[in-house]
Each structure stands twice: as structure tokens, then as C-alpha cells.
Image (tube, rainbow, N blue to C red; front, side, top):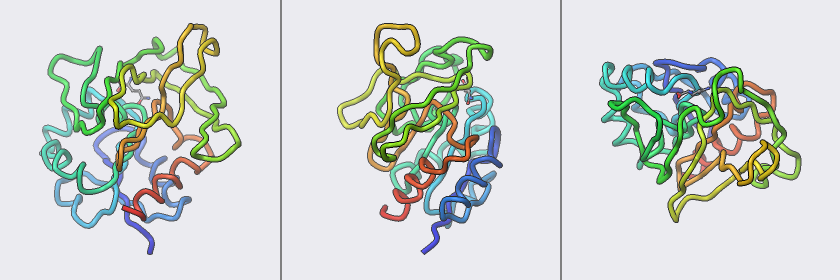
Length: 201
Ligand code: GLN
């Protein structure tokens, strides 16, 4: 069966996720209203700007329906989407809301400003032996993980000029999140991993 996966389409790189999902064996649909949440088997929260996304989710009456849905269907958040799925955020706006569900603390803009964006090849064992080309754009960092959170990828100590590992991809049950943007590279392994999560949910 081809699963139908929604992409939250209130802000951010919606089109890129739709194309990546369609390359990965799913039918992808944009989600702009609470009504559009019915009938989807999974949901992607795109990269973009989490404070804006938070405000628009409230204005569009999506926040509570999304919170209710996070225990029902798999969700995947990239970059700003990771922030939206975090239970706790640092360096956000004081009134910033999240969907939550992931027992993590995410620090916004943890790698510096827009000019400090960077790309690296990361080992991600769950995707196979070839490294994944990860693009970080004003990315958040996972600073704390709860006991049920699995780390899928980290930047090894030393690589980015500091002395500790930096967690940049996590999974907790049906919730998946990355600090980087798989939707803007031609490697669909992350989206395929999510499509498989949706199929087996
Ligand atoms: N810095 C952005 C935020 O806080 C995230 C950046 C991104 O999604 N590329 O929402």
C-alpha cells in the first residue's frame, strides 16, 4: 500500500519534502488546515523558521489537533520541525509553542548565525554504511535526550571544533527528527526510513 503523508504547509520548505516523499514511495499532500489532517498516515514538519511556524500553527487552529495526533501517526521534523517536536526548547521566543512529543531539549540556532551554516558527511548506521550528506542551516542542536530517545546521528567530537559529541538526529517511537535538511539533497534514505516507519505503524 502507498501511504499518504502530509507535509505541514504553513511555512518552510514544503515543496522539497513533498518531492522527497514522492521519490520514497509515498503520496504526499500539503496540510494547511485541521481538516487536512484526517486521512493521512504520517506527517512531516518541514525546515523553516520555528517561531513563525509556532505563531501560524496557533492562528490556523492546528496546534491542538497536531498535539492530539502525535501519538496516533508517525511524525518527522527537519530543523525547525525538530524544534516543533521537542518537549523543551532553549533560545526560543518566550511565547513559542511546540507540538512536543520528543523527550528532548533543543537549542535553537546552536551552531551560530546563517553564515555559520555548513555541510558534512555523517555516518548514520540506520541508513546503511554510506555516510549521509547533511546540510545544516541555522540548525538546532539536541542538548538533552530522555531515556527512550535513540540517537541516530551525532557529529563526532573534534569535527566541528569542539570537544563533545553533538546529537543531530533522534528517534523516539514514531517520532523522528533531524537538525539537518535531507529534503534538499538527492539522497532519499531518510525519507525512505520515515516512509517505512509509516508503513509499519
Ligand atoms: N533557526 C530556525 C528556527 O529556529 C531553523 C532553521 C531551519 O529550519 N533551517 O526555527
